[in-house]
Length: 258
Image 1: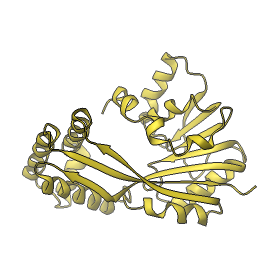
Image 2 (image 1 turned 180 degrees about the horizontal axis):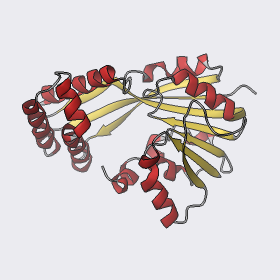
Image 3 (image 1 turned 45 degrees about the vertical axis):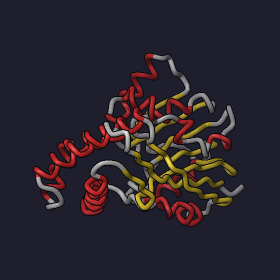
Image 4 (image 1 turned 90 degrees about the vertical axis):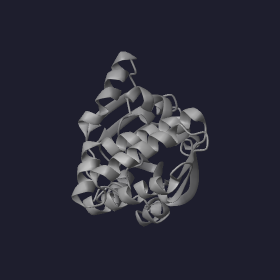
């Protein structure tokens, strides 16, 4: 997926809508684990300033270039470890963690560090995908469901992510001492021709990804032939008028004790 496609499809109004009502226009926001930075750039219109951090400096480069080209002055990107943030105590009014706590090796340490850099009464908003809430229909749906079973097993074997960790966000934030913890679930749906094509073609590209293909073969989860068959199935699914997909996202907001 290109960064330009990210800007269109991964927006703050879709992915951070649950946090936006808790942010003041002059708020100092930390986007913790910002990834490609497309949501970060969308958040800039809702707050005073944003510090966006991710372990992978390279993944943020397209967003940095876009910010420079558009003269966006209130967003700053830097590579940092979310368990040891390079900021003083009480540096931010809000912290946003999108799709990163389920991938963190020490999620408890991440939320404790988020609490450290928040001001008293500051808000944290976290969102994690929840594979237990997958809805998928259309041609060859059983093969495509198998793709998700394989991906989940691969992530488990290689320690990449825990895609059923969204249900634990309330426990995670409460355990870190946050108060007024409010958790919910929300579906992102793909039910128009453009959305289905975007979703299906993205999964077809996943089948060709060098890491995904090599590791699934190494673990005996897929053969090369099965990968090709699954890629082709996603292509057919993405062009079908019968196709529909939806993912559950668990989200939670909480406050640092005043």
